[in-house]
Length: 136
Image (tube, rainbow, N blue to C red):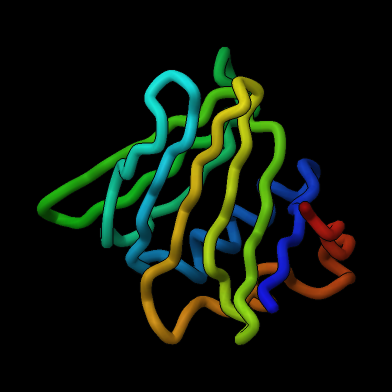
């Protein structure tokens, strides 16, 4: 049975930096769910460039998801993220990253390469961070 783990806010920067190193070029699909636009697919099968946590300026704390290649480039900005969940398949690979925002919206980033990206590589050892708390 698949499981969900929350990535604590204090570990977002480290987690997304590791993700950028380990998952760069993995094809992803980005879906957004919110009340304003409904459920929308924003990008499909584009390589992940990275997920960056804004640390300065008026957008501090926001997330920027960048995907693309030489032919296409797409950036998705997430205002006021509140929680980040990692959904892990029975195989131990990441199915998706779910990012909730203050406006009750969600951004879902699905990893589409098989074999997938092992979750344990990105979570690191307990010396690096605490074990993520179980999610919903």
